[in-house]
Length: 86
Image 1 (cartoon, rainbow, N blue to C red):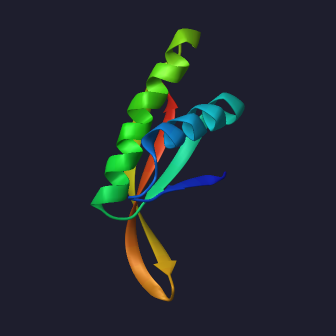
Image 2 (cartoon, rainbow, N blue to C red):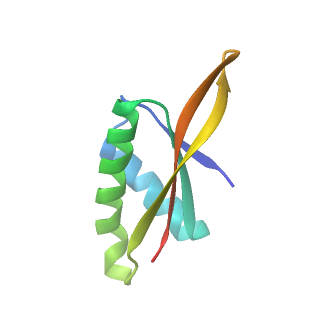
């Protein structure tokens, strides 16, 4: 599964478009964020994406989890957000 990586500088509307497109293609989306700012942008994007897919009768839900990642040789804890259909 592809992972959509969101940063604190990501545009929530563009994140929403990516979420909606991946969701329509695959039925679920895995989002990865590191830090509060990127988590904030991801949540905004998910909220906007719900509006994009609602006309087709879908209601998105989010399942949060922690994920350990290595970035530049340093271990960090990321938030993994699984977006799926209710």
